[in-house]
Amino acid sequence: MDSTRPVEERGAPRKPWFGVPCCPPNLSRLFASLGDYFYSTRPEGVTVNLYGANAATIPVGGQAVGFKQATSYPWDGKISITVSPKAQARFALSLRVPGWVEGRPVAADLYRYLNDQSEPVRISINGTPFTSKPENGFVTISREWKSGDKVELELPMSIRRVVAHESVLNLRGLVALERGPVVYCVEAPDNGGAVRNLILPDTVALKAEDQPALLGGVTVLRGANLTAIPYAVWNNRGFSDMTVWIPREAGKSAF
Image (cartoon, rainbow, N blue to C red; front, side):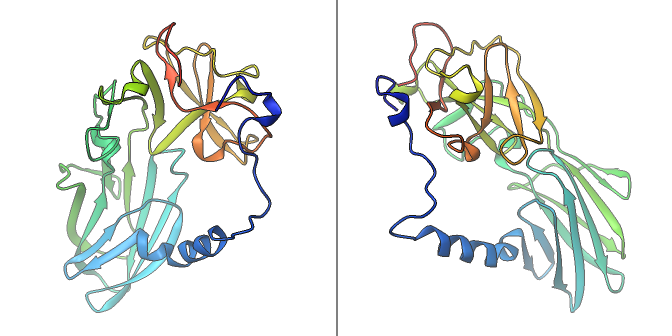
């Protein structure tokens, strides 16, 4: 965004409707098929690919098995999955471990974490800890399941500083913020009306704060001199400056 333009001309305000309405039908298709993305099956069991509050009934080994997830993810990394087969049965339940948990913001080396210390995923079954290293991005639990068995999964929700590969010249000296799967940005209404003067040194501590009354209910990140909101909810408060990339020291510029 060009900071020399009047504030009322910056950004792109939310539109109630577009002349070429491609997005609404695409969203309808997405919502209708969400169940196919959350779970998948294979001969030996079920794979949980996505996390979010839901309930599903899935055929496994010739019988219907109920799965119920309870969680406030992506704001919280605690996920409870209740498994309820009609009759006791043995099968494998595979849980996806996102790449960001293992220190990879993306599959390639375009981005990396400055604070790349990975934290373990915690899993318990009916309150008993279950220990297993992820293989190819999944932890698999093979056991005899009975109705009401509960798997509790806790994904670490550290605040990560993201930097780009040195070959990306425009992003040298800049940092972005991520917590769990959520990428953040800084927007003018939360930062004194401007974001181009912000600096985020590597030594500044950041903390997450739940804001139920903000933008439909989000978790924000706060540091000594800034407030960051989830990128997905920016541009809902009129024209204003926004940036994802923040200078790490004075003299750098976000584009």
